[in-house]
Amino acid sequence: MMIIPYGKQEILQSDLDLVNEVLKSDFLTQGPMVPRFETAVANKCNVKYATAVNSATSALHIACLALGVSEGDIVWTTPITFVASANCARYCGATIDFVDIDPLTYNISVSRLEEKLIEAEKNGILPKVVVVVHLAGQPCEMEKIHELSKKYGFKIIEDASHAIGGKYKGQPIGNCKYSNITVFSFHPVKIITTGEGGMAVTNDPEFKARMDRLRSHGITRSVEEMTQAPDGPWYYQQLELGYNYRMTDIQAALGVSQLDRLEKYVERRHQIAKRYDELLSDKPVTVPWQHPDSYSGMHLYIIRLKLGEMQLGHRQVFEQFRSAGILVNLHYIPVYRHPYYQKMGFNPKDFPESEKYYSEAISIPMYPGLSESEIQEVVLRLITPIGHQTLF
Ligand SMILES: *Cc1c(COP(=O)(O)O)cnc(C)c1O
Image (cartoon, rainbow, N blue to C red; front, side, top):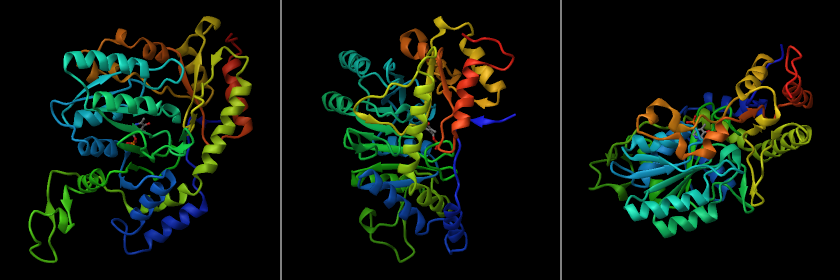
């Protein structure tokens, strides 16, 4: 049986060559390749500073810390995201809350956000940080969210794990024009990969310095940051409690090489999306709506089943795909539904759009190596599942 995953990396000889170069060099980690990757990403994103780390999860954590999130603070995010977008606040001891999604983009709803801010201001419980997530690569409405951040005094982290290579109002995602810090993931299912890896980008030199320290134990080697003159040339200082979140030079080499193909990858993803749009236009599914202000990174292609027009249920359609070797996925289980978060007392009824989304959404395969025949196979399996049972 042909297996079609929902996402898949592409590794070319040029990737192997650059990784090999590092393996044969003096530095497997803390060498020149990590700063080279940071500079390359910063240049692509039109942003001043970049801090490479071992995952987007780590990047989200040090981003929260750099913005001063700590116990007693409140952080808001969208429920339709990977748990890491919420966990980062919990690592810092902050309280998390969720804002329901927009029914068109499935991103955080700006109108719900505003309503919730008005209410929170009355009750004196405004968030310190809002983590917005560019779901599937489609940018959130950053300009409006930025305006709200000025009015209500919160900071913004963009979780752009899906969105490197995307654009908002013609400018690259990651330029941080409307946010304090943007985070990328380089997990193999994402747009470019380093195996495991992530990056936090910012235009603020203080956030950059703090994130650099936090990724390596809270240690500084910069004399200006030290509390006293160095004891000698060996000297460094631990200024605060940090972590080992470093990326290796081996990973960075893969990243540098993959980044060369970023535009090509995102273009190919858009081509595939266009084919799906065409092939699915007469099927009882809602295809992804694209905001006119945005050019998506197109990490995912999420369809929503029009269940009223179908014989099978959401779960059955999902199972039909899987049993045909098409490894569809569901991005995501609303975060508040996980037992760890449930215990905090969230009520699914407070998030009607997220609940509806969760009952209808399926991510079908989307990656640059997907062929035309595979695209057709995916669509065929939606219409005629194995066993010739009619779906619609
Ligand atoms: C993948 C992902 C993460 C976590 O990325 P890692 O690099 O695996 O830590 C965080 N947020 C979102 C939205 C993601 O898709």
